[in-house]
Image (cartoon, rainbow, N blue to C red):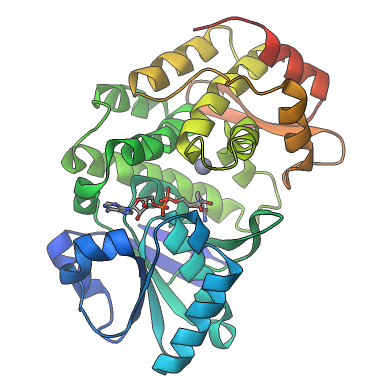
Length: 343
Ligand SMILES: NC(=O)c1ccc[n+]([C@@H]2O[C@H](COP(=O)([O-])OP(=O)(O)OC[C@H]3O[C@@H](n4cnc5c(N)ncnc54)[C@H](O)[C@@H]3O)[C@@H](O)[C@H]2O)c1
Ligand SMILES: [Zn+2]
């Protein structure tokens, strides 16, 4: 699978674990986290060119960014060197931004190891770190030179992290491909990697097609990927990014935004119920937590995706299709969310 971007293209390889190391130059600088390195150091050349970070979102910081740049320089990385991001979305976002900045940009390879990173963050070229003022506030569009997806690495992922990625897979089914609904519904809530590999490919193909059409998020095409995310991000934020994982928050967000779509008569009646049924069966939360509506709206209004004439939502026109709707008024959002229908 090839992804085209402004400066060329990159290949997404689906590889066996035993072969993953062959896709990576022997002299690459691996950036990874402690959990991933514990499980997979043997699959890669265990050179001394490894930066192992603490696991978790805290590593997407300015301090870690600086530390990685300094370590690359100390280890002698030069313009022709490559960085390999071996880990989940945290490592991918950080290492990608480090590669973008080091010597004005060196090549980097994404080896995503969480389901979320395999179906979402490793493809599309968005890289970032967090600032004290908020998540992903410093970053770049900087495409990788290659993405290597090895579904076998999901074997060591815990079930909560698995569901976290499943939420994004359901998102692709809802916004772009109704044919994914049946196979996704057949998975148990902690599926085996071999059951997932074809579905991962299908999801990556959808993401690749969308980001190619709108690399820099300027036309609104890429924004359709935000289904469930406007409300989902507000929930994540209100929970201080510790109460809910991203996939859990967008699961709740997808149900809520399907209800909003129904209220705005963009989404057929009954769709929200169906969305909730599928996500609930996958073990994901579907009901809004008790956060005051004003708090959620406040956070949404400060979101960087907001436009001047109101909130923008990616809304389902049916299961498997969506469109971007701009200028949604706050009142419409609070009314739709406060209706006390439960699924
Ligand atoms: N760039 C993008 O387009 C994009 C899109 C979505 C999310 N993101 C970012 O991705 C980040 C979240 O990524 P994530 O959900 O992958 O979280 P993560 O990178 O924190 O990984 C989750 C946990 O799983 C562990 N882990 C990773 N791979 C493992 C494996 N194979 N086996 C066992 N444990 C493993 C990690 O050590 C960590 O503890 C957020 O910072 C988010 O902003 C970026
Ligand atoms: Zn997401």
